Image (cartoon, rainbow, N blue to C red; front, side):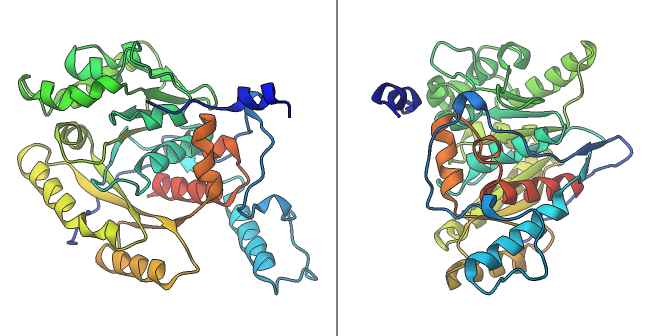
Length: 356
């Protein structure tokens, strides 16, 4: 690769235990969508080498004489079987639009990564998915390839300036049926500006209701899922997300620091349930950054499953170089490397969420 080609590939940097109840409604008679892996985007293909062992080397079917005695071979066998279970799998459309807020006030637990990759996996199966980015960092917008510089109309304008979601929603260029309401740096001051506004906690909910009505009136396909990516805080932006959603999805990093603030998060959710949104439930907990080589990760996973047996997904998201690399190319791992272990894990998680 020449120096000019290498330069063209560079992407500039972008300026917290208790019990919970589960109440997910889903249906199969509203139609089925087949789970298919999306193809990588040709225009963003790059020459790259990863430290992660990819399943690309795994044969599509392993013969009886295949030697799985080594750790790598054992992993290939496991991944091949997991892929075979997903192949041709149909995902049910929910009977109504499911709105999930992805929240955890601790930073670095995988909220944004989880949001965009599960949304991409569901959209690649033919479901219609909207991601609402209310994190001032705008990382979800970056991963979905949606412009979010300061001059772009964004979710800030919806919350503060009474724009409609239809004014700001943009289609993801890499995956059909996937849309994003981007965030800009203006959101950094929205917490203060919201304080003086009427019905400040309900503004996002009203905007989503109006957008759902708008799509129906214009003959557009009903949204199956709406994911709201929250900032790592419990301020008014996150409160707006809790008030707008039916469900909460909590990504938890498989380390003890990630558990420390979970009780405070659940207390805040209980307050929202009591005073602002009685329909809100903690429906999904996803264990992220799982390192199967450590006892710590296994102990954390076991503790979380013991306290939340009905909410924790069976799927685990491993530590993955590919997952970390994808945003630098303005992609999700689903398009950046659909054959990677990370993409497979998010496909499993997405299928589990859809089938609950």
